[in-house]
Structure formats: C-alpha cells, structure tokens
Image 1: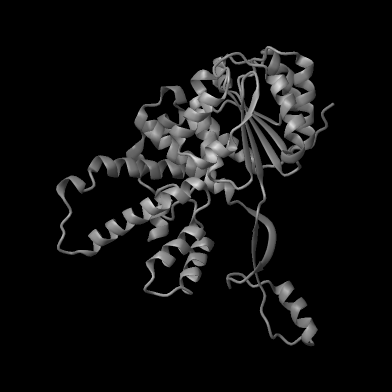
Image 2: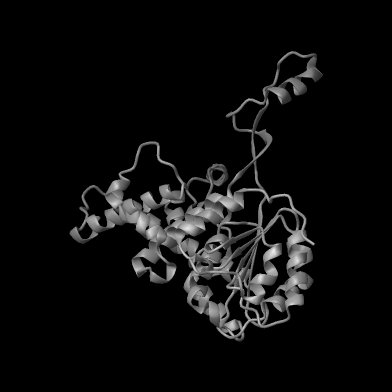
Length: 372
C-alpha cells in the first residue's frame, strides 16, 4: 500500500524494489518504527528530492491508513469523490489506452470520451490548465514505460516464471546429465541512453515550458539520461530537473541560463556539446533528441560539423520542431536545412498525436544509410 501511495507522488517503484523493501524490513525488530522507516527510505527513494519528501509522505500515508481503518470515522461529504473527478480519471485512463501505455483487458468505455481524439490533436499552446495537467500525467506514464523496455536477450533469474531449457541442460551436464537443478530466465532491461538538447531561445519561447515539462518527465524516469538547454550558450541542467519539483526546477533554469528567450546560435552550442560532453554522453546506445525550430544565427559549417559528429557517434538522432506541425512547413531555416542530412527522424511534437509517433521512433532501429 505504501508503494502504491508513493507512486501517486511520482516515485518510480518497480515490483523488484517492493520485494527488496519487504526483504529489508524482515530483518528488523518489529517494535522499531525508526529502523523500519529508514529501511524503506533507503530502498524506495532515488533522488535528493525524494529523500527530503519521504518523511512527509510517510506521515501522510499513516494518517490516511489510520482514518481508513477506523470504521467509526465516516467520510466527510466534501471528501467524497466528485463525479467530475471520476470523469477526469476515466478520461486519463482512456488517454493512456490511446497511447498504448497500459492496454486494457476489457474494452474501455472510450466512446464516453469522444473528445479524446480532439485532445490528442490539439496544439499544446491551446491546452487549458486542466488539459495540460492531464497531458503531463500521460507524459510521465509514457516516460516510465519507455524506460522499462525489455531486450530480446535474456538473463538468469531467481523468479520461477520461465524455464530456460538450454541453460538447464548445460548446467546439469556437469552432473552427468541428470536433472538436479532447474534454471529460469527473464528478459534483460534494454539499456537505452537518452540525451535531450532543448532550445530556449526567443523563437521557441511559447514551446519551451512544455518541452521542459517533457524533459522533466523523462529525467525522472530514466537512470541514463542527460539534459541540456541552449540559446547562445549550452547549459547542463540534469541535476536541477532530477532534484527539484517542476515549478522550482523551471524557475532555477530560467534564472541560471543567460539570454533565456534571447537569440540562438544552435551550431556553436551543438559544437560545444560535442567537444565538452560528447565523449562521455554519446555512444551507439544513445538516442539524441534535439528540441528546436532550427532558427540559427551562426555559421552553417559549424552546425554541419557538429551534427555530423552527433549522428556518427549516436544510435539515432531525432529532431522535434514544433513548426513542422503546420501544413505550410518547409525546412527552409538555414539551421534546419543544414542539419537535415544528419537527422534520422524529424517530427513536429506540437500535439500528443505527433509525440506518439516519436515514441515509436524511440523503439525502432536506425535505417542503414551513410551520411557524408
């Protein structure tokens, strides 16, 4: 129950971590709540922010549990779940199903929410506050699902779910072929690495807050992710997004990045990335997402060399340009035109429908081609 409660508070807790928590507390004296709480904290928290929030959430959970267990305490009228809240939750479930994040075993009553189709095609700039909150919850679910994709490769497992016949035979050959030990296996986690590069210049001002929401969702779901923002200079912001709630993180980034909403020199910023971070961040397991409209005021040759390096050293390069959602869009901006030969996927990401296409691209391999 505590793990379920913490998940609602944006903690990422897997079944394995739940098992580890149970194992940890089984070794502790039953009458020591302090030891009990510290053991849970050590297993279930993953960042400094979660460490500091744990006591507050633990106390809140205890209070709710105490209230639920007291049959004499009746739920106050204002605390009863309103039909409006139920509708929003059902709409959220329908939205998750549309994203194919958690397919239902039974058919959902999506017909009751015919506006889902409208919502997924609605430009992010036109979303109401309620729609934005709904969308951001869906983004967090999407990020967590992508972070836990499984590989086709398998590894030995202590959980007796799937018998590995080949390894069982090989292991028991040492005992003369007599079956004395069964070997089980499970799929390995796919070790996907992400690098997010977000343009926060003036031309991207309307979209920057949403894209940083997107970066925040991914930053809190992946173990191997680096996030950087740029306008006229490059700034690494991974730690800020990882250790602060969104509103505080956004304010800190806005304050610390000089020339926020100013001009942009995309080429020189990407060049700085390849020189200062490329060696440690780029390899053939890394997908690079660049979020920008491509309006560059620098030298095209600098952009070309930077993009060529990023393309050659990474698994895939995906460029998200919010302007690409327009029917009249053509990649005529000099930065966009220069970068285009070194981009695997160009998507608009101006609404949820276009973002869903990006999700499928994260799962697919790069098409075999050589770029000069």
